[in-house]
Image: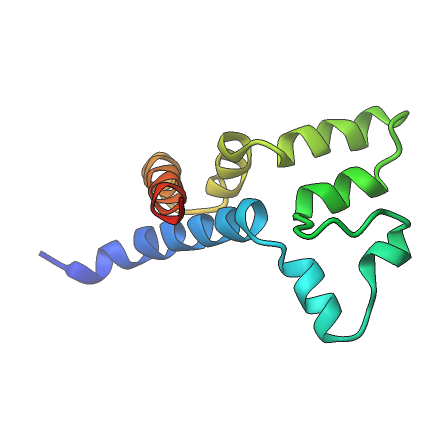
Amino acid sequence: MDYLSFLPVLSGISFVTTVLLLWFKTNFIKDYADLLGINVCKWLDIADGGDLFVYDLLAATTNPGSKIKRFFLKLSSCPFCMAFWISLLTPSFFITYVFSLLLFFLFEKIAE
């Protein structure tokens, strides 16, 4: 059995899981902006209330009247939807989708 044939599947799962963890469980945009000396909260005119996740940044910059922006904002606020669309980019969609969500929720449970 060729073990290297599983490498694209494993890399897809790890990629989707990493994106989900960064998107939903960290405030990496605010941290990197602070590291570079950029005050994101002042720039976006929002209150600095500690954790500022990517979804919060998108919600603060989205025009509520735009249906297209609101649609993509809703898609990006759901881990199932986000994993679905990112998994479409991988070689084995179904395996990547299921296992990346399992790993994401496992890491989320461990972090609690």
